[in-house]
Image (cartoon, rainbow over the protein chains, first blue to last red):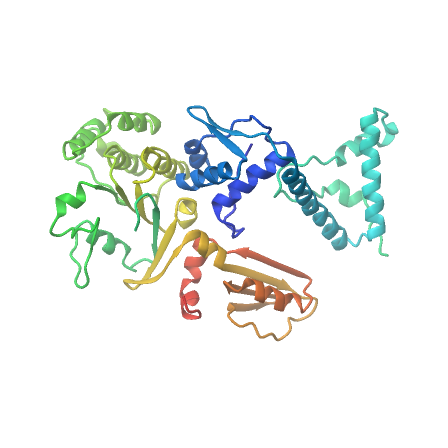
Length: 170
Length: 274
């Protein structure tokens, strides 16, 4: 997993690292048994105090999220689902909020937004079922597939989307 | 200062940073006040103090006839303790040729050589005075990584860093606590995480001209067109509530970086009771 530090968030740096591991665990970017980077290279890479990274790992260990195997490093522990569900929902809500705000700024009304969400769910359902939609819209639909990256990434609005989505003003 | 932590020392040119550091090293004697390093007076117990610290200044001078190897051997001869492995590792990492004459080294290479000399001695305290100014970005990056890796990680609970710098953003992640000095006096000393949590920049954009508002405790309030910009000092929640009640089009709040805190430090201290 890739860590990053944002000094503008106002959140202590070690807590940022703790939360990134929690989110990575909840979203599947880190799986139980996965090895976390060791303290020194991670501190060097992020150019943060070595003790900050050590503090984050100590915190993760005391919360039962990771465990240290002597001489081998830190591993993600088997997950406990209630926390994960909570974190997943929190993650998702943040993304939904971004979409709601973006829709508002683009003057896309709530009904249209709900419609689009349904449309996208159906699109992925169709993909999952293996029945490809009409060939004429296929490349465009591919363009619009959005893969979640990290929790702090912004909701992408490609030029393509801006051009093809007609804002409704209801 | 406590062992194992990193302290940032900020101030404008002429504020007294280098003077302070020179007093710590007994290169200057204070005209008033007193200096203590490891609880000792560097003037009376110079050897005891200097044997436990290492110093990298912004401009480093070596005897020009010495090679890289000579210069390191020369420095090692003054030290009770010297780690050859660290010295060799870092020479490789910085791609320094041991046979190269120090007179022919670039500014960046001289700083790297000074850093090797400082870290190989594995001192309890590493004093850095504007160590990376005038160096290219790659050398600056390597310098900081070396301080974190080769120095700090060697014995994290006892390796203390004291760094004076104008390149605050580069050292931001390293710094646990910082002091801002002005005209030779301590203006502000704070824990870095707490400072970033306490000081924040708030921006509110309104549909029309910003309303007249009472914003107690807000610092550096500025109006730019339909936008209001201000700095909160531990009272972001209240300020945001007051602003939100006016139904702004957009309301943003972000922490001040250490550099921004430094830039705003005068008004932060004047307009608040710290």
